Length: 91
Image 1 (cartoon, helix red, strand yellow):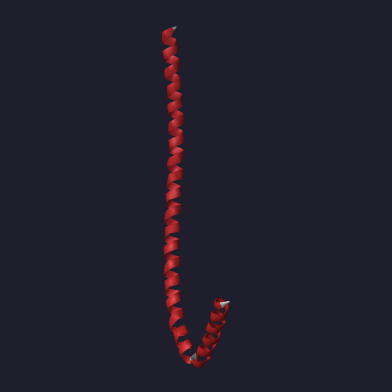
Image 2 (cartoon, one colour):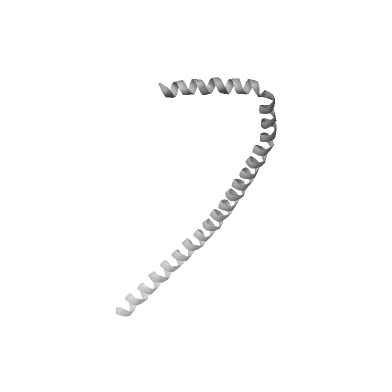
């Protein structure tokens, strides 16, 4: 109950303060909006750059992955050829 009472008192004092200092509140809002836009834009730019870097990294990984798959297939064929040659020597 004490929390509910404290919340109601804080709400009433906040409304009274907002009415009493309305012009000061507007000044704070006017100064805060450009700051929020600057910080939000900087954050969005940073996240976009990180996403671009991740995308480039994934592309290079997928390219190297294809190269590695081809190399594995080539080595498998080479191993099979060596096994066949070894079996021919035994016979």
